[in-house]
Length: 294
Image (tube, rainbow, N blue to C red):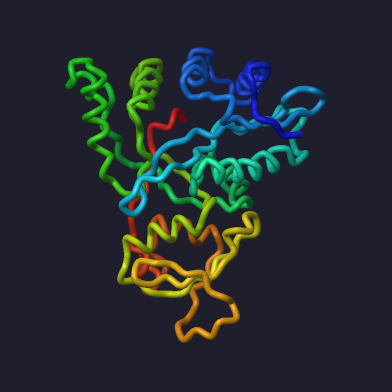
C-alpha cells in the first residue's frame, strides 16, 4: 500500500536510505534536515512498515525561454528482503500523478550506472544530460571571492547558470545546502552529471516549445504507454498547438515519436544526430544538471 510519509515514518525512511546507500550520518543530516519533506516522499507499506520509498525534490528548470517546475527523483530504495516484488515500479508510477498535481511537467533523475539507466528507460525516461569533462567553477573559490558572504556568493553562482537554457536552476536555499555539503567533503571538484528526463505533461512542454519557435509548423503523433494523457496528435504552427483527430486528412507528413524520443527532441539532446528534418525543428542544446547532492 502506498502512502505519503509522515513524522511517524520519517526515521524509517532515513534508516532505509542508510541500509541501501550507506551514506554517512553527517551527509544524511544535511539531506534530511534541508531537502527531505514528508509531503514529497512516497512510501510502500508492507508488514506494517515502510519497505520502499522515493522522494521528489522540486526545482526550477530553464526550458525554451521559460522557467518551469520539475520533480527530481531522489533516494529511490527498497529494503533488500522486499526487492523484486514490483514495489518501486508502483511508487514511480504514482510519482507521475504527484508531479502532475504539482504542475511539474518534467521529471529528472541521476542514474547510478548504465544498468540503473536501463531500468528507468522502462518507465519512459531517456538520457538527456551528458557527464561533464571539465570541472565546474569551484565553490570554495566563489566563496573566497565573495569574502565568505553567502549572499554575494549565490549572486555569482546564480549568474553562471540562470541564463542557460535546459539547466536545473538553484534557489538561494538550494545553494546554502550545496555549500554545506561541499564543506563536509572538502569542496571536491564537480562536473555536470549524467541524467535522465521523463515527460509528465507533453502538452505543456510542446506549448512552450512552440511559443519559442513560431516559424516551425508540423504535425506530431506521440505514444506513451504509461501516461495516457500524453497520447495525442498535435498540429504545431505559428507558435500554437492544436489537438487533431488521427482520422483527419492532413497534407503534411506526421512526425511519430515515443515519449523517450520526444523528451530528447524537446531538450535538444544530440538532435544534430537525428537527421536534417528533426535537427532543424529541434535545434541542438546542451542540457546541464549539476550540484544535486548526488
